[in-house]
Amino acid sequence: MPPSIRSGFIGLIFIVAVSLGCGFVAQPAKVPEKLPDAAPEQPIPNAVLPFGNPSNAGTADNDNWLVTHSSHVLSYNDSRGTANWVAWRTTQADLGDRVERPRFEADESLPKGFRRIQYYDYSGSGYDRGHMVPAADRFGDERRMEETFLMTNIVPQTGDLNQFPWNKLEMYARGIARSGNDTYTIAGVYGEKGRLRGKVTIPTNCWKVIVVLPRGSSTINGRTRIIAADMPNIDGIENVRWESYKTTVREIEQKTGLDLFSQLPKEIQETLENRKDANTMRSP
Image (cartoon, rainbow, N blue to C red):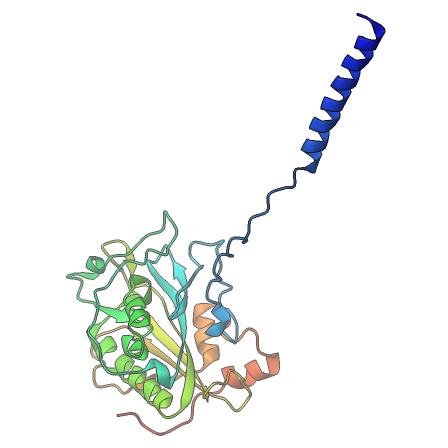
């Protein structure tokens, strides 16, 4: 090939290579016009647990599994088939007129492999499906009220407990909320006296701790009113007033192994947990 043609051919190859290279380098990375929305945040347990997580419930232990709903937060015990404890806040706005009761439903938010208790697991047992968070504490919001009928919020209670002293304490607490205060409540169970269908533990006791605060406040101090009650899950107590079952937070902690006010300073814990409610105003 003559030198002139050879030079021209080499030059043409050089120009094409440079052009292709420049074109490759010049292509900008494609950037989406709008980044995808972040996943919605889950409800924060501290909204109803401002004084601490009583059992450090989380997602490492199937018998202390943290379940968060818009209405309440709970520690679920897969071995027992019930909650260890349930926590919620009640304000005047949460209350309302009685609404139609929905059906009891299994809690589908539990992870795969967990025991999902059904409403019929209680059928024919002689025990009521006893609410931890009362439905009437959520009449102001139908969707949140429906969450109280999830079976993770239910425990086996005798009719005499559920319909009489337990119910009377629930009514008393709502009266506090109607009067302009907020209540922060933790309720739970302990003990075992049998099982329903071999699945659901029947507790020996049901307990409740109610913190009474001014509306909109979550600030607690040594003078804050605390109502603690520990009730036996037995028959024959339909005429017993709920006040007869008043106790201290410390006594409930000793029986359950929980630390109900873990985020409070030790000196405030000592004051509140060892004081039995002395309010003598009786409920209806």
